[in-house]
Image 1 (tube, rainbow, N blue to C red):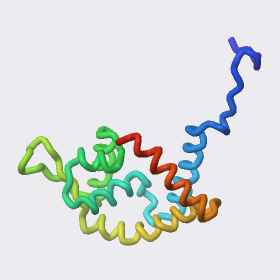
Image 2 (cartoon, rainbow, N blue to C red):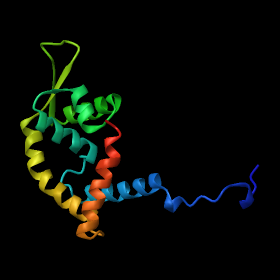
Image 3 (cartoon, rainbow, N blue to C red):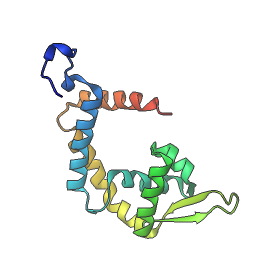
Length: 150
């Protein structure tokens, strides 16, 4: 049973809520990413995993999870998809058989060579409504908000 009694609920302006605004900004960024990236099957999260694997060399899933702030279960699914595409490889760690080591493949490195310049443009386009001072401030505020995950 639904009533339309506005007095029953406190005033809540969704357009002033950080979670809503962050989600909308992320939706905008994702749309720009999908439009600009040359590989239609590469998501921004997969891209982050590939960039991290390239940066770290051969690294355990736990370290990639920490670096990307992607939970382990989600990361396993992403790694599986990238592995099926031949963009990363996964091997058993000889020092610790419980660990899987992830590294970029030559095909993955080739994709990154094309995707990284596009990613820089995507960042520019995402930030394009902001002045140069607002861009710096936005990035610093987001970095500070993201630090609480560590």
